[in-house]
Image 1 (cartoon, rainbow, N blue to C red):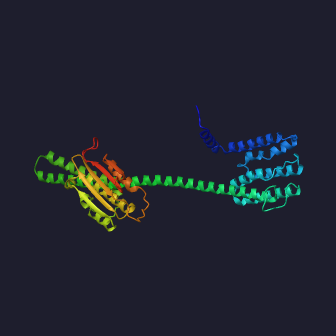
Image 2: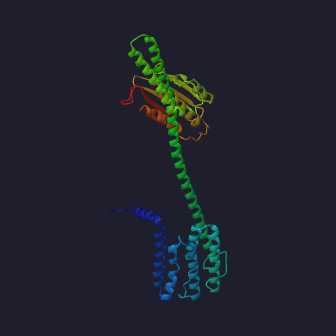
Image 3: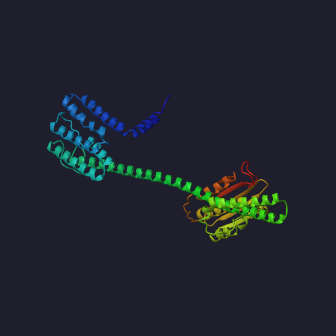
Length: 403
């Protein structure tokens, strides 16, 4: 199996990113092996003590993330020892390897720790280098041959790079945490929106069912009075029907009555015939609303009427929030099998700033449509703007009884 070299390199980087200790070990061991091999290839070859001290300079990098301050201290100490003993004539380390430790300490520790530590290491390294006569005095215009300015430049750049990388990492961590919280809040809000919309649907259905059950009870009592001296079985039967209806009302109020506790009014359940106030509110907000409602919509089952009204209400609310003053076309069409509700709005008005939404409106529409095993489509309109199209079946769903 052939693998592209760049793909293999990216895969290796991902694996090492998940194992920081392995990356540090690879850096420390790799640099140490490279430094020792290149030193041994010199002519004449250095003695064992020189090769050992030279290699020890990079060994601490194996712990650069887990013990950054200790790594900087150890590498500084080995640097001083190498400078003082001078085990390899003509070979001196300079600030290059120490800058790796400075970067590590700035990357992995707060600036209040890394800055004094880097400054102390710089002071020790420069003083040792000057006292041993390896480098010249500070010279702002020159980095080579090695001067005290070289140390300052390398330390400064390494510390700034490490500090910047630390800030980026901390900000990325905070953003990741914030995204996780936002996702959790969105999931919670979505669940709450579903619960709230189902409670609203339950209140609407409660009104519809209560109306019909009350009618059953009244009709049964009227029938009992009309029977007069009729057969006792008939009077008893209609009396049981009335009692059963009363019991059903009591039980329904007991189970669903709490859902109506927060209602703002006790007005009759809304229907497509009551779209006037919704259209007026949208018009007052600057929208240009056109409505087309079939005459046959007035004969819809009560539950379908309520849901159709709520879907139009949510669609107009979304238009005002997200599109602002624009053209809106509301269409309600009925055929033998279903009621189709369509709300299409034009592009957002120039200069309109959409109001951030929670997505509850669309969740509510989907919940209402799902209660009828209907279909709903929301998304951009082919000619610009947005559309909401919902279909509520009028044919009874098997297993659910009549609507």
